[in-house]
Amino acid sequence: MKRIKVAPSMMCADFLNLGKQIETMEAKAIDYLHIHIMDGHYVPNFTLGPDFCRSLAEATKIPLDIHLMIENPDSYIPIFAAFGSPALYLHPETSYHPLRSLQLIRSRGARPGIALDPSMPIDTIRPLLPYVDFVCVMTVNPGYAGQKLIPHTINKIKKLAGIVAEERLSIEIEVDGNVSWQNIPLMIEAGARILVAGSSSLFQSASPLQANIERLFTLIGRGGECT
Ligand code: DX5
Image 1: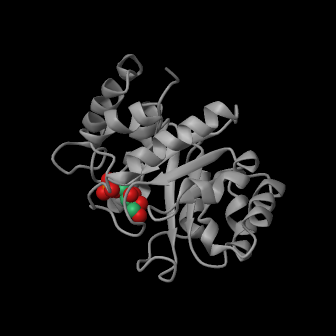
Image 2: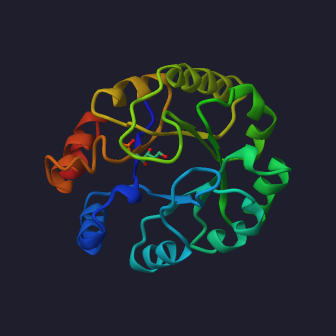
């Protein structure tokens, strides 16, 4: 089975202790830092912005995994694409011309990804799949941490994984939302290869970040990397 990658959801991080948390993530071979950009329009919440991305890009070599939950993404793609060739995701329904927006991401040196709302069927993005490196299947409604998995989304991961294999596409499937200790095996079994880990696992307040990272790495068969 392909190596499962881990992308901590930075909106769930301890902002008063961020430097120390980044050190812990670097020491533990974390793969990406997942950053939700919310504009209060596409989703009814506000989170992080360009300055936060810049500080992270300057502070660490861990690649950024930037998730645009915003309207009118084309205006902001050049800004976010500049932070070290990140993975840059958009929700296709936020763009008048999703293919043009994905091509804009690639032309700016970033790696394009599609983020799929739970209500959006896989078939709507099928024509776009040859143009992206990633697809993020949202397993909760976008906007807030602490929500419960929406059950039908597991079948969406399975369907997408089938299409990716059938069409031999080089796409990594990411999941975002209630990536919990119980749901992780289901999500991997369905075909997820990148886990956006938030308050349901890595940032669970019951235990320190380091212990949660070790528990997650053991669960996904990478325990040996945590010694
Ligand atoms: C939803 C958020 C959450 C968050 C992860 O828009 O994107 O997915 O990062 O946190 P939990 O684990 O609380 O779902």
